[in-house]
Amino acid sequence: MRLLIMGPPGAGKGTQAKYVAEHFKIPAISTGDIFRANVGQGTPLGIEAKRYMDAGEYVPDEVTNLMVRDRIDEPDAVAGFLLDGYPRTLAQVEELDGMVAFTGHSLDAVIVLTADRDEIVERLLRRAQTEGRADDTEDVIRRRQEVYAEETEPLIAIYRERGLTHEVDGMGEVDQVTQRIFDSLNGVIES
Figure 1 (cartoon, rainbow, N blue to C red):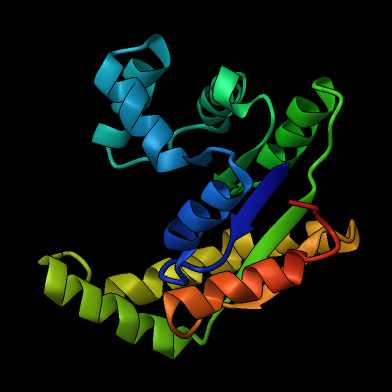
Figure 2: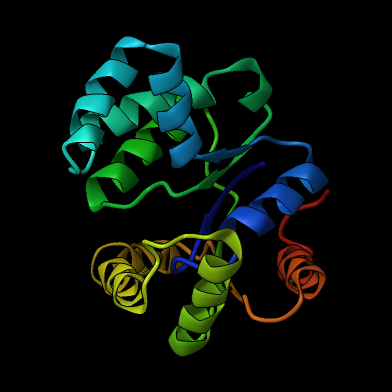
């Protein structure tokens, strides 16, 4: 089982990734977690990534790609994985295609969580208050939405053309959204 989960910041990807991965007994792999693990362990890739992160810059595709490749090569990901936060660029789509093809597999599905932009902003503002995230201002949240729309959302069209996307309404109670995901995948992926 090889899945991607995509959607705008605040749509609930991380939350849903955990439940979907648990259901299919595959690891949920987030690029943020990969970065933190490599930096924390002081790996050569982590040291290189930290230089960019400390400067407030994006970690280059080649570093990100190598980290993802290393992670999906780990034993727990042999039977499959759910990627959250990757790919984010066309070059990463192409790299992931090669990684998966190298193993003799292909992606099974791309879960796309959809949500009303204003509702997401409200959701993230509430989260910022309850979790004390002072840097999550409305302007910052709206800018993240714009960056997603400009840079990552266009990748969904690639997967849509391949017939892999399963668009799911990401608004509502967590368990309702999870059930919508499973209903969407029903018949496509046997669990």
